[in-house]
Length: 297
Ligand SMILES: NC(=O)c1ccc[n+]([C@@H]2O[C@H](COP(=O)([O-])OP(=O)(O)OC[C@H]3O[C@@H](n4cnc5c(N)ncnc54)[C@H](OP(=O)(O)O)[C@@H]3O)[C@@H](O)[C@H]2O)c1
Image 1 (cartoon, protein in one colour):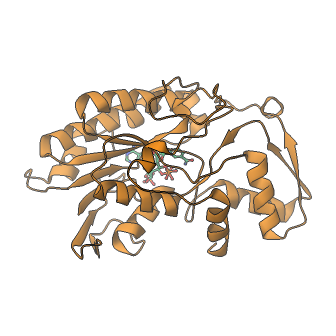
Image 2 (tube, rainbow, N blue to C red):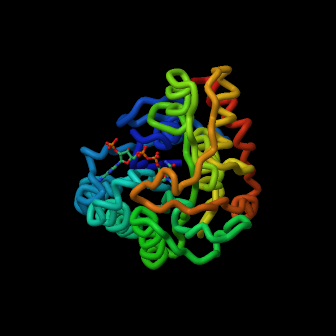
């Protein structure tokens, strides 16, 4: 399988590079093997090589300078992911997350590849109290969520065969993430306050990367929800992290209202795994994923 990956330096991108090439070096063509023993080829343009806002550079990254390169799949894991930053930088959020994705989709259509686009649970408003199905209506409450929701709509128009993977609450090695932050705080404080009224599914980038590659090999299309199984609040997540670390810090549950942030997050954003199970792909429980993450940290 030949893959072009945007966002290789990110939390998820690093694991995708590992998954597709068996190591985490970036910006190089690396070859691995798929299950049939065929060679995988990974091209991973950096944000300097191809800023998503630069239509011509994006096109060149996908089609080659003479339109002579062909990827089976383009995976778009690059995005402006600062959820609170998006609130004060609406134009940038839409330029990268929506128009940038459109640039990728147009090139993918021109060169006849397939596109896997990473989206988010934040396209939902969080008013449900049972897991969101892939077909549930979008109703984002933040600029970040809006930019992703609009990108989903545009991509489905441009590329009816696009595969849109919504995921949530990513954690993993090689970048900032919730467990790393909690471990640092727990090592320096006697008590941590963590919100207990937002519920979702933590997702280990290693498990997600594996599922994404399986979806590509299965020629997936449409909207697919991919998270670790089970769910918790941020407080419950933090409690589990501190418990596993053996540190003596106490974790105190607080409300979102006590710790207001610029972007409004959904109170409930658990994603149903039905769309993933349709491809016979399952995901481990988030507690199991957390143990593996911590063992390797
Ligand atoms: N993190 C989460 O909890 C979460 C939850 C749901 C969905 N997602 C989605 O999952 C995907 C991966 O997220 P992540 O947390 O791995 O992201 P991340 O760690 O923030 O990495 C973002 C990546 O995007 C690249 N990038 C940023 N702006 C760019 C631009 N203008 N042009 C080209 N590349 C650009 C960055 O390159 P540089 O390093 O060079 O800046 C980096 O490789 C994203 O689509 C995100 O929206 C994430």
